[in-house]
Length: 287
Image (cartoon, rainbow, N blue to C red; front, side):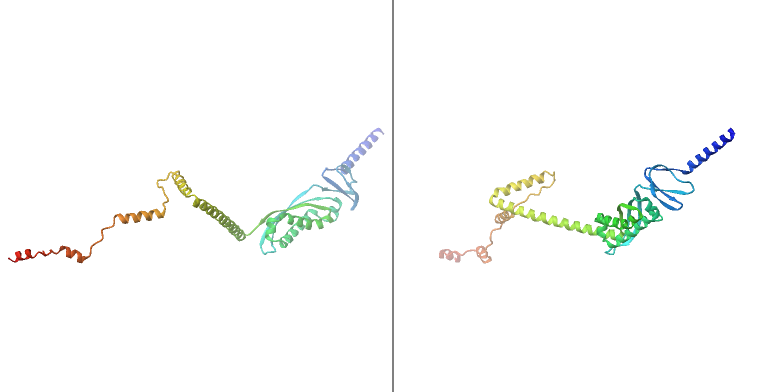
């Protein structure tokens, strides 16, 4: 009799241990458990920790409550200004209602991924290229609203959406580079012209001051000579007034000019022998 009781007790303990092992479940801190009893959703959601279900009757499904990072594959599209681009994005979302995420949609991850791709293509078609490149914050907010509207019904909340990269065709990149280069050249020319204008005004003021003080011009000339000599050049360029050169040229012409020539008739008259007007001399010559 005692042996039978011991055997029955061991059997009950073994059956209890098997039942506990089959019914015991552990839900992690970042998870929530949704229980289906005979296919019907139970209203209570199991929290983190140890929990029990009815083996063979209940089915526990765990739902991750962490923020999920989902990359959106690159989507090609044509912008509003007819430019073909390829845009990559990333979506951050989390489950707020485990029961709705399990019941309302078959696979909420796949659903969010497809909605993100569709919304990304739509936002590309509604935007211009300049907005995609420089005004991403506004586009991120619009993309977040487009994905979050249907996701709320699935028990999912979109935390944020970020556009990672915008790929442009090579021809468009070269065109944008030429445009940027032309714009920089235009600004450089404007700055250079402005500098020339300011320099001309300062030079005009300096010339006015030097005209009142002639010695200032000589001092400026000496400063120029000193500045040129400081560079250790073998050739020294010295400015020289043109008026002084003309004066020296005229002086040289006056010193080295030949004497004026006499007329030819006067020269011939001077070479002919002169006749003696004395009559006595003439008579003696005849004798």
